[in-house]
Length: 411
Image (cartoon, rainbow, N blue to C red; front, side):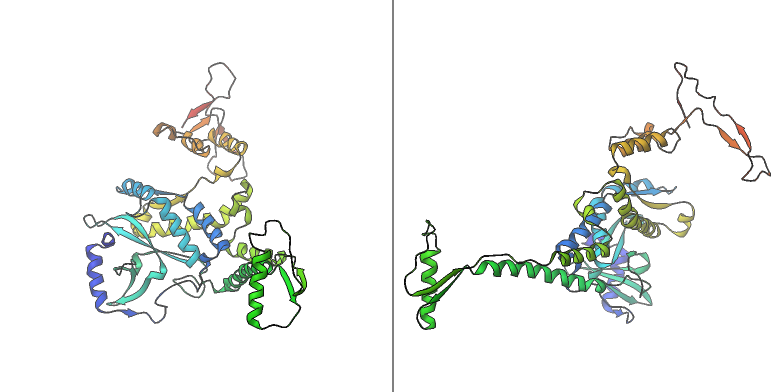
């Protein structure tokens, strides 16, 4: 994993290896509680659903920096040598949900000194350390190789942030629900096993030793319940006083209790069954997007912007944006209505309209915007307030329906 070590990083790592001062105000490692929310089927499904939708976000760089296009191409295809963009966003979202903290290390080009990629760091493999009065994040690549980077250069995403200024809280509040979920699964498993274990009760007509009882049990089972008895007839001799068949009835946890536990999981992860099973409609998707995916996209945009650009570059309009076309889940009729209403007003380009319908774009010529000719520009005289009607300037004559009239005008 030497690809993540620049010349400066190696120098810092050698120095940090000589002396570590673990901060006493923080835990040296940041892990989820024992068992992990990722080890349960229902919670993993909720996390997977969130990460899957976040992995469809598009990373765009806006601004005038010369290396923007090259870096944008890297971030949109392969942010680091081990992951493409989908895997990067999926892993980042998964770590964010499971650990409530996610760290992002910038990859620095040794020749130019510029950032040429990003890599997600798992909090359980990270330590906060100090060296020479500076705060560093030391991370383990899993093969006994370590790296170190100044903490101020690290991108940091977190949720449930309360007790600490730097990190999100753990998932201890969810622990009782996890225990109930685990106990529920065990109860179902044991109930099925126990209900299927005994099929007959037989009483022997005489007192015999425990050793002989075991022999009789095996004899009864092999003679009457084995594969050889394909006729289904049970024959007994006089040594058995009474034989009764047990009706097998699988035992399950109460459905109301199961529903309560599932709802606790849904509340904690802000999701629902329709999202997990992909049976949602456009309104339900919109609610989930605005409540879960969009906040992740906003934080991801801010974190990557502050990690990649300096304050001066940000002031000049450079930024990273996580964007998405959340109309992909709308019905064809809803998509058509949106495109029709927005295209001829200049809000959408041809390419953006095609993307809504998941169709190939037209290239640079598809980035032009059009407006209908009958629209007019309304201007206000100096001194007019917002409630007064200003002078209306007709930019284009209204359409007269004449043959050959173009209904739109490029702007």
